[in-house]
Image: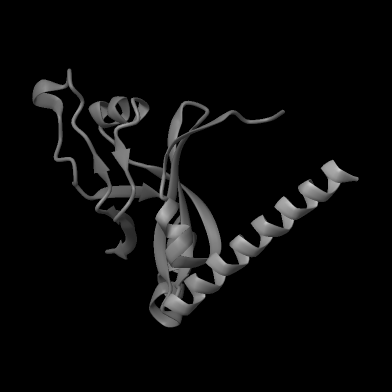
Length: 155
C-alpha cells in the first residue's frame, strides 16, 4: 500500500546552502487555525531552523500566515513550534549538533494520513566554492543531455 503524501511547503534554498547528511520525519504541534492556513498553502520555511531546548525539539522562524476566518483564534505567525519526536532521536540529534557542528534545517512540510509532518534534515553548511561546483556540474549535465538529444534526433 502506498501512502498518500501531499507536499504543502518546501525549503528549496536549504538544498543549495547545505550538504544533507540525514533526514528525519517529525510531527508538529499546531493550533487549529494554523493547520487550516497550512492546508491553504500559507506557510514559509525559508529562514527557519530547528534546535533542542530543554529536552524538546523546537522549530524557530517558520512563518504561518494567520487564517483569514480565524479572528480571535489566530496565533503569532512566527511563534516557536514544538516538534514531536522520540526522546532517543532528540538526544541523538542534540549530540550531532553540539559535537559535530551540524545544523537542523526543515526541508518540507507535508500531509501524511491527514496529519501535518515536517521533514527535518541534519545538514553541514556549504562554502561558496562548493555551491559553484554544484552549479558547474548541473550546467555540464544539462549540456550533455542537450547534446545527446540533438544527436538522437539526427541519427
